[in-house]
Length: 253
Ligand code: CO
Image 1 (cartoon, rainbow, N blue to C red):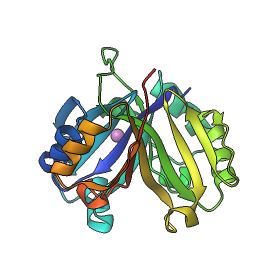
Image 2 (image 1 turned 90 degrees about the vertical axis):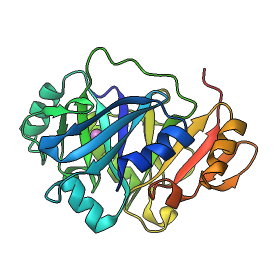
Image 3 (image 1 turned 90 degrees about the horizontal axis):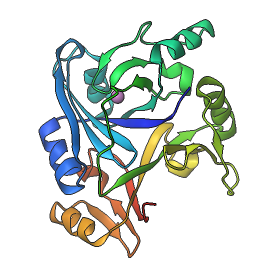
Protein backbone atom coordinates (compact mmCIF):
# COMPACT_ATOMS: atom_id res chain seq x y z
CA UNK A 1 0.00 0.00 0.00
CA UNK A 2 2.66 2.56 0.92
CA UNK A 3 4.79 3.89 -1.95
CA UNK A 4 7.25 6.19 -0.21
CA UNK A 5 7.80 8.68 2.57
CA UNK A 6 5.81 11.65 1.30
CA UNK A 7 6.98 14.19 3.86
CA UNK A 8 8.27 14.83 7.34
CA UNK A 9 6.28 17.42 9.30
CA UNK A 10 8.01 20.01 11.48
CA UNK A 11 6.15 22.29 13.92
CA UNK A 12 7.46 25.86 13.92
CA UNK A 13 6.63 29.10 15.72
CA UNK A 14 6.69 31.20 12.57
CA UNK A 15 6.21 29.84 9.07
CA UNK A 16 7.78 32.96 7.56
CA UNK A 17 10.98 32.63 9.56
CA UNK A 18 11.12 28.83 9.08
CA UNK A 19 10.83 29.39 5.31
CA UNK A 20 13.83 31.69 5.48
CA UNK A 21 15.85 28.73 6.67
CA UNK A 22 14.38 25.68 4.86
CA UNK A 23 13.47 27.41 1.59
CA UNK A 24 15.99 30.22 1.29
CA UNK A 25 19.12 28.94 3.06
CA UNK A 26 18.76 25.20 2.50
CA UNK A 27 17.22 25.87 -0.92
CA UNK A 28 14.15 23.61 -0.85
CA UNK A 29 11.64 24.84 -3.46
CA UNK A 30 8.13 25.69 -2.26
CA UNK A 31 5.58 23.17 -3.55
CA UNK A 32 2.47 24.61 -1.92
CA UNK A 33 1.52 26.91 0.95
CA UNK A 34 -1.84 27.50 2.58
CA UNK A 35 -3.68 28.50 5.71
CA UNK A 36 -5.98 25.64 6.67
CA UNK A 37 -8.51 27.42 8.87
CA UNK A 38 -10.42 24.40 10.20
CA UNK A 39 -7.18 22.77 11.34
CA UNK A 40 -5.76 26.00 12.76
CA UNK A 41 -2.47 25.85 10.88
CA UNK A 42 -0.50 27.82 8.36
CA UNK A 43 1.54 25.28 6.40
CA UNK A 44 4.05 24.93 3.60
CA UNK A 45 5.34 21.93 1.67
CA UNK A 46 8.87 22.15 0.33
CA UNK A 47 10.45 19.72 -2.15
CA UNK A 48 13.36 17.63 -0.84
CA UNK A 49 14.38 15.11 -3.49
CA UNK A 50 11.71 12.43 -3.80
CA UNK A 51 10.08 13.52 -0.55
CA UNK A 52 9.03 16.82 1.01
CA UNK A 53 9.37 18.80 4.21
CA UNK A 54 6.16 20.18 5.72
CA UNK A 55 6.34 23.23 7.99
CA UNK A 56 3.38 23.82 10.32
CA UNK A 57 2.65 26.98 12.30
CA UNK A 58 -0.37 26.91 14.64
CA UNK A 59 -2.79 29.82 14.22
CA UNK A 60 -5.01 28.88 17.20
CA UNK A 61 -4.31 27.56 20.68
CA UNK A 62 -6.83 24.68 20.62
CA UNK A 63 -5.20 22.38 18.08
CA UNK A 64 -2.87 19.38 18.33
CA UNK A 65 -0.12 21.34 16.61
CA UNK A 66 -0.47 24.25 19.07
CA UNK A 67 -0.42 21.88 22.05
CA UNK A 68 2.67 20.16 20.62
CA UNK A 69 4.44 23.52 20.29
CA UNK A 70 3.48 24.58 23.83
CA UNK A 71 4.65 21.27 25.31
CA UNK A 72 7.74 20.39 23.26
CA UNK A 73 8.70 23.55 21.41
CA UNK A 74 9.60 23.48 17.73
CA UNK A 75 10.72 20.23 16.15
CA UNK A 76 9.90 17.04 14.27
CA UNK A 77 6.17 16.36 14.55
CA UNK A 78 5.05 13.59 12.17
CA UNK A 79 6.00 11.42 9.23
CA UNK A 80 3.68 10.98 6.25
CA UNK A 81 3.53 7.92 4.00
CA UNK A 82 2.15 8.24 0.49
CA UNK A 83 -0.51 5.77 -0.60
CA UNK A 84 -2.55 5.60 -3.81
CA UNK A 85 -5.77 5.09 -1.83
CA UNK A 86 -5.89 6.50 1.71
CA UNK A 87 -9.58 5.56 2.07
CA UNK A 88 -8.90 1.88 1.40
CA UNK A 89 -5.86 1.84 3.69
CA UNK A 90 -7.71 3.53 6.53
CA UNK A 91 -10.49 0.96 6.14
CA UNK A 92 -7.95 -1.86 6.39
CA UNK A 93 -6.34 -0.35 9.51
CA UNK A 94 -9.76 0.21 11.08
CA UNK A 95 -10.70 -3.43 10.47
CA UNK A 96 -7.52 -4.37 12.38
CA UNK A 97 -8.58 -2.13 15.30
CA UNK A 98 -5.55 0.11 14.83
CA UNK A 99 -5.95 3.34 16.87
CA UNK A 100 -6.71 6.28 14.58
CA UNK A 101 -7.01 10.03 15.06
CA UNK A 102 -9.06 10.39 11.86
CA UNK A 103 -11.88 7.93 11.30
CA UNK A 104 -12.29 9.20 7.73
CA UNK A 105 -9.76 10.93 5.49
CA UNK A 106 -9.96 14.73 5.12
CA UNK A 107 -8.42 17.37 2.92
CA UNK A 108 -4.93 18.50 4.00
CA UNK A 109 -2.04 20.32 2.40
CA UNK A 110 -0.58 17.05 1.06
CA UNK A 111 -3.89 15.91 -0.50
CA UNK A 112 -6.38 13.52 1.04
CA UNK A 113 -4.94 12.69 4.45
CA UNK A 114 -5.57 10.85 7.71
CA UNK A 115 -3.60 10.51 10.94
CA UNK A 116 -3.08 7.37 12.99
CA UNK A 117 -2.87 7.58 16.79
CA UNK A 118 0.78 7.74 17.95
CA UNK A 119 0.10 4.78 20.25
CA UNK A 120 -0.32 2.62 17.14
CA UNK A 121 3.17 3.46 15.87
CA UNK A 122 5.50 3.33 18.88
CA UNK A 123 4.88 6.95 19.88
CA UNK A 124 5.42 8.35 16.38
CA UNK A 125 2.60 10.37 14.80
CA UNK A 126 2.01 8.88 11.33
CA UNK A 127 -0.02 10.49 8.56
CA UNK A 128 -1.19 8.78 5.38
CA UNK A 129 -1.71 10.89 2.26
CA UNK A 130 -2.96 10.46 -1.27
CA UNK A 131 -1.55 13.52 -3.04
CA UNK A 132 -3.29 15.28 -5.95
CA UNK A 133 -2.55 13.66 -9.33
CA UNK A 134 -0.95 16.77 -10.74
CA UNK A 135 1.85 16.82 -8.16
CA UNK A 136 5.26 16.39 -9.78
CA UNK A 137 8.47 16.40 -7.75
CA UNK A 138 10.47 19.63 -8.12
CA UNK A 139 14.25 19.68 -8.48
CA UNK A 140 15.91 20.49 -5.17
CA UNK A 141 19.57 20.98 -4.18
CA UNK A 142 19.04 18.85 -1.05
CA UNK A 143 17.08 15.62 -0.85
CA UNK A 144 15.49 13.74 2.03
CA UNK A 145 17.25 10.47 2.77
CA UNK A 146 16.14 9.08 6.11
CA UNK A 147 14.37 9.76 9.34
CA UNK A 148 16.07 8.45 12.48
CA UNK A 149 13.69 7.12 15.14
CA UNK A 150 14.79 6.26 18.67
CA UNK A 151 12.97 3.34 20.31
CA UNK A 152 13.31 0.68 23.01
CA UNK A 153 13.52 -2.22 20.57
CA UNK A 154 14.27 -1.43 16.89
CA UNK A 155 13.53 -4.98 15.70
CA UNK A 156 10.16 -4.97 17.38
CA UNK A 157 9.33 -1.46 16.11
CA UNK A 158 10.33 -2.44 12.55
CA UNK A 159 8.16 -5.53 12.77
CA UNK A 160 5.09 -3.49 13.67
CA UNK A 161 5.73 -0.97 10.85
CA UNK A 162 6.10 -3.84 8.39
CA UNK A 163 2.78 -5.25 9.56
CA UNK A 164 0.93 -1.91 9.60
CA UNK A 165 2.25 -0.37 6.39
CA UNK A 166 4.01 -3.14 4.49
CA UNK A 167 7.25 -1.16 4.54
CA UNK A 168 10.08 -3.26 3.08
CA UNK A 169 13.19 -3.86 5.18
CA UNK A 170 16.49 -2.50 3.92
CA UNK A 171 19.59 -4.45 4.93
CA UNK A 172 21.71 -2.81 7.64
CA UNK A 173 24.93 -4.30 8.86
CA UNK A 174 25.45 -2.82 12.25
CA UNK A 175 23.76 -4.72 15.01
CA UNK A 176 20.67 -3.52 16.80
CA UNK A 177 19.45 -1.03 14.16
CA UNK A 178 16.69 -1.67 11.70
CA UNK A 179 15.94 0.18 8.45
CA UNK A 180 12.70 0.21 6.49
CA UNK A 181 11.78 1.90 3.24
CA UNK A 182 13.06 2.42 -0.26
CA UNK A 183 16.40 3.62 -1.61
CA UNK A 184 14.59 6.17 -3.79
CA UNK A 185 11.64 6.84 -1.54
CA UNK A 186 13.29 7.54 1.78
CA UNK A 187 13.91 5.29 4.75
CA UNK A 188 13.14 5.05 8.45
CA UNK A 189 16.15 4.10 10.55
CA UNK A 190 15.13 2.67 13.90
CA UNK A 191 17.88 2.83 16.51
CA UNK A 192 18.07 2.09 20.24
CA UNK A 193 17.17 5.29 22.11
CA UNK A 194 20.60 5.35 23.79
CA UNK A 195 22.17 6.08 20.38
CA UNK A 196 20.20 9.33 20.10
CA UNK A 197 20.67 10.69 23.60
CA UNK A 198 17.82 8.67 25.07
CA UNK A 199 15.21 10.21 22.79
CA UNK A 200 12.13 8.13 21.97
CA UNK A 201 10.44 8.92 18.68
CA UNK A 202 11.67 10.99 15.75
CA UNK A 203 15.20 12.13 16.53
CA UNK A 204 17.02 13.33 13.40
CA UNK A 205 16.84 13.92 9.68
CA UNK A 206 19.44 12.73 7.17
CA UNK A 207 19.58 14.52 3.85
CA UNK A 208 21.77 14.30 0.77
CA UNK A 209 23.17 16.91 -1.60
CA UNK A 210 25.16 16.48 -4.81
CA UNK A 211 27.03 19.75 -4.30
CA UNK A 212 28.28 20.77 -0.89
CA UNK A 213 30.24 24.00 -1.46
CA UNK A 214 27.40 26.38 -2.42
CA UNK A 215 25.23 24.83 0.25
CA UNK A 216 27.84 25.33 2.99
CA UNK A 217 28.18 28.96 1.89
CA UNK A 218 24.45 29.61 2.10
CA UNK A 219 24.19 27.85 5.45
CA UNK A 220 27.18 29.65 6.94
CA UNK A 221 25.61 32.97 6.02
CA UNK A 222 22.74 32.22 8.40
CA UNK A 223 25.10 30.71 11.00
CA UNK A 224 23.48 27.26 10.69
CA UNK A 225 26.60 25.10 10.37
CA UNK A 226 27.80 23.15 13.40
CA UNK A 227 30.32 21.09 11.46
CA UNK A 228 31.26 20.87 7.80
CA UNK A 229 33.70 18.55 6.07
CA UNK A 230 34.39 17.68 2.42
CA UNK A 231 31.39 15.41 2.22
CA UNK A 232 29.15 16.22 5.14
CA UNK A 233 27.46 19.01 7.04
CA UNK A 234 25.92 18.89 10.49
CA UNK A 235 23.51 21.74 11.18
CA UNK A 236 22.93 23.58 14.43
CA UNK A 237 19.51 22.41 15.65
CA UNK A 238 18.73 25.92 16.90
CA UNK A 239 19.04 27.18 13.30
CA UNK A 240 16.78 24.43 11.94
CA UNK A 241 13.70 24.74 14.19
CA UNK A 242 15.22 22.38 16.72
CA UNK A 243 15.66 19.57 14.16
CA UNK A 244 18.92 17.62 14.08
CA UNK A 245 19.92 17.60 10.41
CA UNK A 246 22.86 15.85 8.83
CA UNK A 247 23.60 16.32 5.13
CA UNK A 248 25.96 14.04 3.24
CA UNK A 249 27.34 14.31 -0.27
CA UNK A 250 25.62 12.16 -2.79
CA UNK A 251 25.36 12.10 -6.56
CA UNK A 252 21.75 11.85 -7.60
CA UNK A 253 21.36 9.02 -10.14
CO1 CO B 1 1.77 16.29 7.13
